[in-house]
Amino acid sequence: MICLLGDRLGLFSRMLMTMGIGISKTRQLVVIAVTLVGTVVAFADVAPRMSWLDNGKIRLGVDLSIGGAVTHLSEGKDGPNMINSYDWGRQIQMSFYSGPVPYVPEGAVLHKSWTKLGWNPIQSGDVYNNRSKVIEHRNDGKELYVRCIPMHWPLKGVPGECEFECWFRLEGNKVHAHSRIVNKRPDKTQYPARSQELPAVYTNGAWYKLVSYVGDRPFTGAKPTTIVDRDDDRGWPWRRYQTPEHWSALLDKNNRGLGIYLPGVCGFAGGFAGKGKGSGGPKDNQTGYMSPISREILDHNIDYSYQYTLIVGSLKQIREYVYDREKNRQLPHWEFIKDRQHWTYRNITDTGWPIVNGLKIKLENKRNAMLQGPKTFWRAEEASALVMHAAFKTEATSIKVLLQPYDDLAAGDWPQWGGVKRPKPAAPVVVPMKIICDGQMRSVKVDLSNNPAYKGGMTQVRVQLPHGTGWARIGGVGFEGK
Image (cartoon, rainbow, N blue to C red):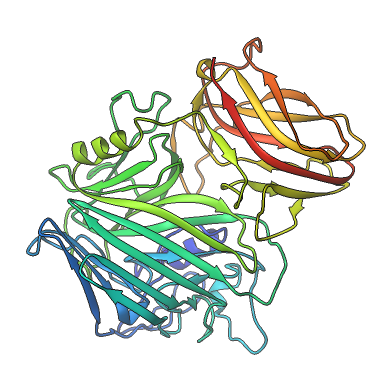
């Protein structure tokens, strides 16, 4: 979630972060503080109602009084709790973002500090101290399941028009998690994609060191990247970065802690907020943060899931687990059989959810109509051809495929907001593709091996559709090796 900290930085940051990039909401237990942009509603302490899983190596606890958010994760029964619960926006929990902005249903009260946030149901509760409601819970000692009705963070007592579900299972030093949102919105508008936290993870101050791999030689054993350390004065604002290894970790002074792995996702955010790197417990302000980030379209009736793994242990153990899971990885390939595969749009829409056998795109005579793939990684020398399975019904005879090189922007980590100037993205490699516009599905293959600009690391595929009217149906996009 987007973070509000008691040091008065939070409300200002939330205003800046209206596109759904996470920090945490805040509480003020005694004094209602005057902040940069307004007042903060006081939060009352809530007695936890816990449900536990324990396999002797790790112990996981969710709080059923706040929607089933994870409030405890430790090594063994007696190990220290790593999860921060200073306020209801910390923990490990689900949160989603969409339009409109502002989002104010008839008769609702919108907090004046959150007018630019939009549609934002969260797992724990709202800014006015109304808790999300657990409507189903099961725990057989092996799998823990929670279903809840979330609350809209910026609104007073307004439940989300959706349901959240979470499944948790322990395996050795790992938590395997499956999260799901089922939307039931009356507003059927297809709003533009926004960044989603999948999920947000907040640790106590002892786990302050943010580590990942940021580079163009993934899965080679290259040195990991320390993004935030104890004495570097970094971490706030949160850092944004791309990791082609799909993991990040928050570690203590002994390089032990908590890692998160979300297959296929390269975008991450993370950092440390508050004073006191290296100290602090679950109710203290200082906190580490990390989150896999993916831009997603959330239809009014979408059924959207993601699965991630939390790894408790040393940096070596965390990375070795990811490497083992990725040993059979393939070149990027997306089949749009039943979902969008994290692809988003610019100046176009599709026919909506459910997705059945392809993305059905409406061409409405808009310039720069674009299909945008998720951030990913491949090396040009390993992928000599691009294949698209699609049908077109329009007047055009060609489209353009844009391949984004690994560049200075992808090679760094950058403050999520503030005055730091980021480098401009490198120019894309533009590949023309001839199409036949008779409405029939066919595969088109483009040889990339003789393109002198196509070399080194690559990070994204975009497809520029023709300017005009008609439709396109995209069944799949992918690369072939030599």
